Image 1 (cartoon, helix red, strand yellow):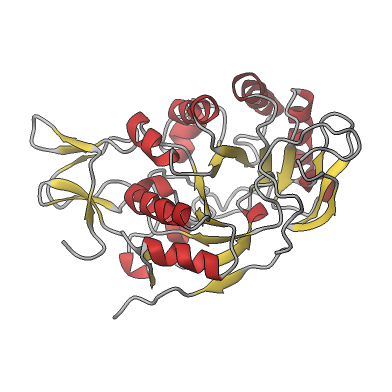
Image 2 (cartoon, helix red, strand yellow; image 1 turned 90 degrees about the horizontal axis):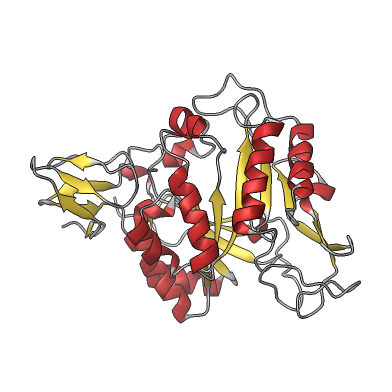
Length: 361
């Protein structure tokens, strides 16, 4: 095998000679030489292999709030990267140049798991984030990186759609410290027609994360005008989250901009995001946010007990800190849900591209 191709274990042979990939609910059936919809998993030498191990579309140091994670060591920096491909087919993809890539040659950077972990240390990053495209499709690479990060005290963050089967889900998340899960909508029609997927496996992932792991996770929903932004749908979604996941799971409602195959849709009005946030709070969600727009009130964190601003934010910049060393409100001592240091990081809103290793030509 080539250096960037590794064997995988989530697959089985079918009676008709094809092999079924068992990583995600898509269950691609492959003959020799064929790739799954994700593009990076392929049938080769009568098994399923990952073809992008150790390869990246690029590295960047970001604020952790950009993932977005508002309750996971606020103000710290995170080393972000992705690979190519995706196991969903979202028509509105905002990272389509990476997630829809069918050219592994776009993966210009090369880095071993140990190199990524050491680079995060050298750059002063508290975490490494698997982002830009879904890390479940580079399962083996992500887990090896997470292992290496744990060895040196660096956290790992998965930015994911949560579209993964039960057994690989269990293995994957036992190595993650935090996750932001895209809950893309709350109807099967949207998932089927817009994403080429199903809603229920995503809900199963969320319930699993809540009930069976210690992973800190937050939710993001990109609100698309006329598709998933109705008050009725937001009401149903936030009621479900409050009832099944609890009031402490943060929800981010973010603005869509026309892209990929949905360029005919207008950008999301700020008022739509504000209304979604208000609906969530009204249904018992303690921490609801607006995103992709300048809204200091919608980006800040408030004490669920007394209403004091405990983390002020202007875009990704921390502007106020009202938590004590134990993560409690200084006004009323109510605990704020999340993972906190005694004081916030000071990375700010910077975004710094870095190179870890160029691929040889």
